[in-house]
Amino acid sequence: MIGGASLYGAKGSAIGAAIGALITSVLNNGGNLLGVNSFYLRIAIGVLIILAISFDQFQSRIVQRAKAPPG
Image (cartoon, rainbow, N blue to C red):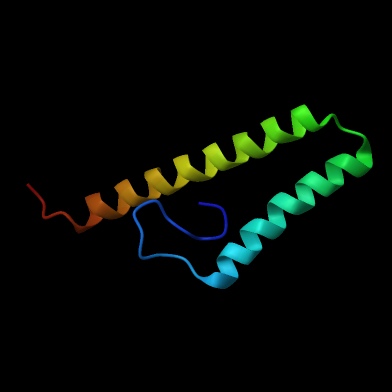
């Protein structure tokens, strides 16, 4: 997901998790400084997380198809 962790496990690192937390906190703080309503900030961060999960699922399916024997 955000920062390199995967729902399938055995992927990611502490640095990746820290980067993911940094991304979400920068979005949150930047939105607050710009005066964006906190409700919309939470929606934006939620959409970002959903997109990251979707990308992780898509990427995992591509890797599984590439590893599968033809036929």
